Image (cartoon, rainbow, N blue to C red; front, side):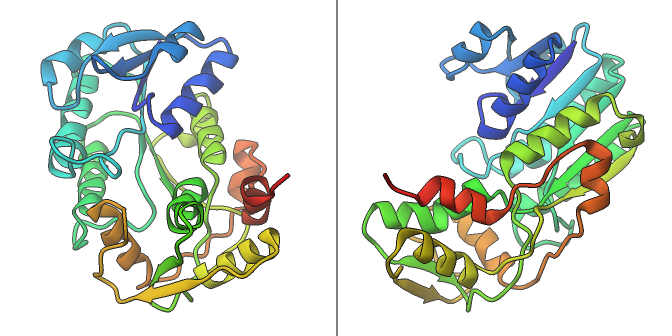
Length: 286
C-alpha cells in the first residue's frame, strides 16, 4: 500500500492518478470537506487525517509500505502555515511512518532550501529534510525547481486574465530551470520502485534555464501582442498573491538555478517539458 499525503493538491493528484494507472494500491490522506471524491472514484482509498493531528496519521499508516508526501502550506494560510505544516506536520508524518515500519518515505522538498533561509517555508522544508535523513527511514528527497504551471500561472497568467501588467520582482534576469508539475509527478512515481532512489536527494529541473524577462518575451510572442511589465523591489507584496509567494519571489531574484537534467531524466525515464511547450499550450488561443 502506498500512502499519498497532499493528494488533493495539483502535484499529489497527478502522483495519485499515475500510481492508479499503474494499478498500484493507493491510500490518500484527506480532510473532511476536501475535494477528494474523484480520486476515490478512480480507485484510491481515503483515510481521514491531518498533519496537525499526530494520532490520525498513525491510523492512516496501517499496512503502508511507502509514503509519498507532496503536502505544503505555500498556497494555504491560516492554520496551515510553515510552522504547522513544513516544520511540525512533516515531523508528525515522519514519526508516524517510522512507528508503523514504513519501508520508504518519499518527501517533496524544493530546490534551494536552507535551515538559514529567511523564508519560513524554505527553512521548514530544510528542517524536515534533516529530520527525515536522521530518522532511520529509507528515504528519497525530491528537490524540484520552480513549477512552471504554478509560478508562470501566478506571475504571468493571472495578471493577463485580469488585464493587468505582469509584476516581476527585481530586474527579472535571474535564470531558473522551471519544471513541469507532470514531470515531477513522473519522477516521484519512478522513485517508488527504483533502488537507486533510496537514501538519495534528487534535484529536478526542466530542460533549460530561463529568466522572467525571457518568459514574458516568449509569452508576448505566443500571444502576438505586447505584455506590459511592472518591476518591484524585493520585499514588495505581489498583487493578489499570498505573502509566502512574495517572499519566495524575492528569494528567486537573489540567485540562479541552472540544472543539467540529462543523466537524471534518463535514469528515471522522464522526458523534460520545455517552458515553450507550456506557454504554447497555455496561451495559444483559438
